[in-house]
Length: 113
Length: 119
Image (cartoon, rainbow over all chains, first blue to last red; front, side, top):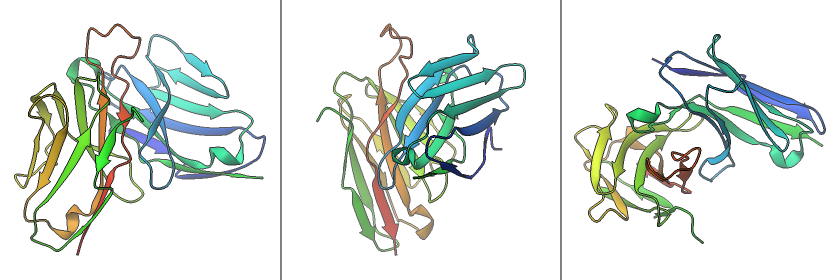
């Protein structure tokens, strides 16, 4: 059972454009939603994270939008740059259950110059 | 470098051999996690430790897999009698535990991974 579904699988955006990646989850016990960025040959690196008591969190060019009733959350990358080209993973966990992260399938982002 | 380190970075082995990987977490972190990532997929949770205690194991972790964190610092993941299906990237992550006080005490910091190829 895939508890976190991520879309699209791949995304091509022009430099300066907005990249949008969506995730949907099933388990209402999830209460921590991070996004990770992964470059080839590297481990995932935490980008930004949110708890369900807020609907939006912004850090620099990265924004998470969260819709608790729809059980969906998304990552927006503003002014996308070629250096943002990477694979992005959404994830979710239940704090009180030991923080085991359940990851989405990933989105491969390519930002064209 | 104070990040999570893993050794070796690459391991090629023949089917049936045993392999062991090591993870050194960020020094002040008391939680340590192992994940497995196959090509084109997101990481899948395997197991985690709070200090030296192994608190959770995924059903993905067959009897051929064993993990230890003997002194609550570094951890090892051993795979016995490797199979071709074990070929994957094995990722280690660490985090603070409850009581740290930060907003996201469970932020997990990942190492670069060990890529295992079973021939």
